[in-house]
Length: 273
Image (tube, rainbow, N blue to C red; front, side, top):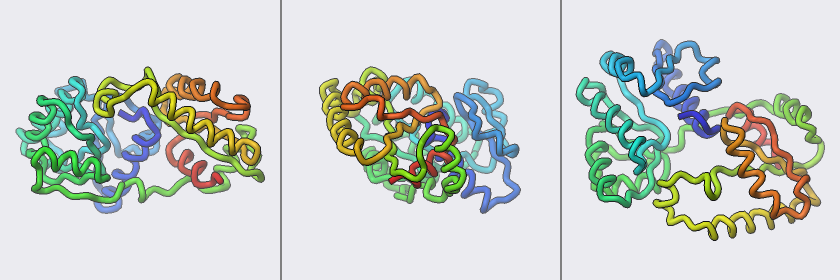
């Protein structure tokens, strides 16, 4: 999926790396949803994963199947999609690699067994962080496993002049310091698999919000405070934003920005104080 700014950046980085190496390559992206990020890339075809016949037709003719992001988690629907794609590519003799992927420690018996078998069918497993690398190692996978830099490091944030223009349109004074706050799911919005894998407790989320708010309250007299949405679903970020406001001494001091393309978001973060 491409619901998150970080997911858009993941796609763009891998696209950039492979396009620079194979200039004439064409790309097919299997996704649950489309995104505005594809509009600037006419050589990318987006196919919803539920269109099974189209997915199989493309796997039958593609040179390599690249898995990006963090799709390998213990949730039945997601695990089913991973299983279908990897087994289909393997049956069609399409080489499979992961690039810039991550994983969390596997805790269920079915998850350990399933993903151990799936990873064995992948010719090159390139994990972007030590947590993911260790999670795969703990499944008994040693062959073709490597720890690599996060591919998003190759992206260039939007230039400062564009960032300043965006901030001005939001009512942010560009000649004064500003601080960016960016969060993801909190409390009831957390997916069930995250709650399980991270031993989530509601009290932990409350303590985290309290600690974060103390830092924000300290900065408030010295800096403009902007909340940068991380999701294309604005209602999700709005819920997180509203859950944070009650902890602030001056709730209206925290301003929620519009939703931005990942390169603009990176530029806003880069320019922040």
